[in-house]
Length: 138
Image (cartoon, rainbow, N blue to C red; front, side):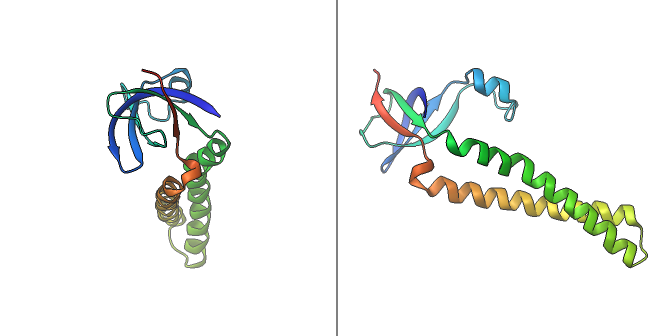
């Protein structure tokens, strides 16, 4: 498990919005390079930390590789499949194959992006996947 630290910004039931700074692994990833400054995460709050407190929380690492694959690779694979299918359909219909490939690629990329959004919302609701506040540092 990976441990991080941050400050509790606000509470929402038994979860807390925690502000964390960017660290070495965030900088090397580059996935959200446009996002500057501190980031926020929604963490389970079993120890009843209050807003303004400095806390330590743990994150499960086993889901990171699977999530990274789903978020970054699946839409591209689906776009390639869509390009091939669009090209093939255009060939059968004797239409412009380049336009067919582009349309098929766009359709499947959007479908992949929608799938990623659905996966993200379902994963966020699972208790085992959320970060968990483990202690109050200060």
